[in-house]
Image (cartoon, rainbow, N blue to C red; front, side, top):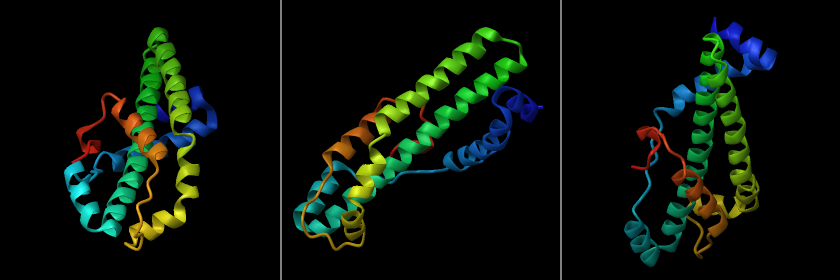
Length: 164
């Protein structure tokens, strides 16, 4: 029944992509992010720059993954609202959910649009850092700020996606 409704609302692509989103969400719900404390990072970078850079860039990649995961969760929840309200002939909730889906997608794009370029631009240095070979401090304040701000602004993030 859900597949038929999804197809009515979103057409063939909805029928194809919605089950994929559901599969992604089921795997995301068990994801944890092992962030280190600021104190631990500072203590490490003072004594071992290469280890500090490894910690820093792994956390940037974890935050990028977390941001993508939160975006997928938001998308899935709004689409669920659209499908359920359509099935219950609730036009008001259907319209509100559709509007929120569009706003959510725009917010995600507007906030995260430069993240792939920032990661690609720094890919050689990120790889070097993760391998423990980066002996100078190189950070990306822009990436760090965007990713931290995106996560901190999102309400309703499951506990499994909160930092540990």
